[in-house]
Length: 249
Image (tube, rainbow, N blue to C red):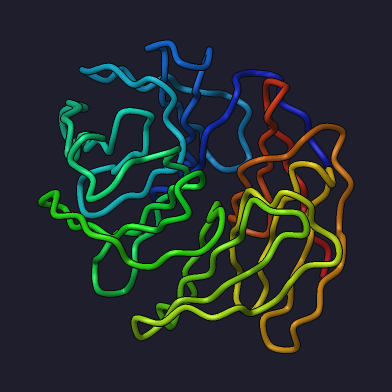
């Protein structure tokens, strides 16, 4: 089953309980970033009234009672108890020059990782704002973490590559034959789901046997992808809204 929901240009997705939250980047480089949520299976969106200003919020992740959000000007911390927004790490406080912060994931030890797609760097940081380089690969974009704590990264290259990071080491897992300009990445069990911004597709990658197959051709250039409860939520770079794709297995 396929749905098209015309609403807002999406930066990233995150789930909390039975709600799916998403960031809206609005107009690029303007201070009009927002956060919305909806219940799984519903088309009724709820605007989250936050105290603070976001510019182009993209990836975000929940830890305890906070959202940690990647934006153009740094990493923000949003309290879910009073919806107050505070700057955790300013862009000038990164260890090196920042290009574009894209995605955030959280490992099993409570350490965050944020990809900087245009500086070829993935950083790691904690909830106190301490940040340092984790590893460097060319054009890191979307990331996903499996149940064992391994971090998977797709590259914004053509063809796209999938890397895996574990035990402080990064290695190439797969160079895709199907994905051009890899952008979004999400995981369910031993399956990764990736979007190709320029190949206009969603690709399923089997981690165990390292095979890939295209499962959907998108109508536009797909960006973020998020797996939740048997469905994929796919956003686009040049159109408002997102598609919901029910997986058939």
